[in-house]
Length: 198
Image 1: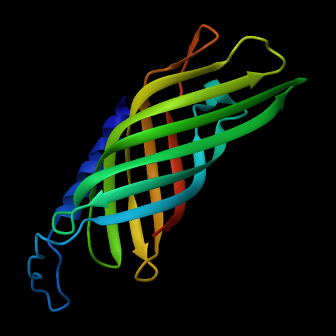
Image 2 (image 1 turned 135 degrees about the horizontal axis):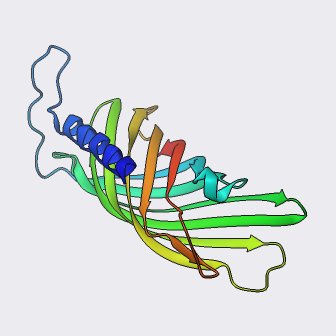
């Protein structure tokens, strides 16, 4: 839980930085933007690596991941919402037994982001539903389950062109363990990702 508190503190700092007024190059505050401006909608495609607890999930603890995220924020306040899907998978041989683990997640929550500029930090937090499917050898019993949790993440948008950004983000999931074949297994993870937003 201490990791979640650290991640939450980082998110709070990012939120504070996003809420600061935009500054012109001459050092004076920019004029307030009209409240009638349309929301800023963005879709991001992200690839990266999901890191599970090594003591529990070795040798499939480092999983390649991919995700899609939609966000909509106010052009004047930088506050809004986000929803998305993520997936990761890895397999390995443990002796003569093959282990294959797939994780899918659906998340949604609140987002704060600097709405304008070439460098725009963001932070978000909310709830996540995670589906885990673990295939171990030829075990006949089902090893799939869904569990709920929360997430916090933060990162930066770097403007490449008027319509395309480079995105870097770090995401932390915390919450309930998953029940696989009667055993409670920790699935909290840290995800590092990069991608494009448009």
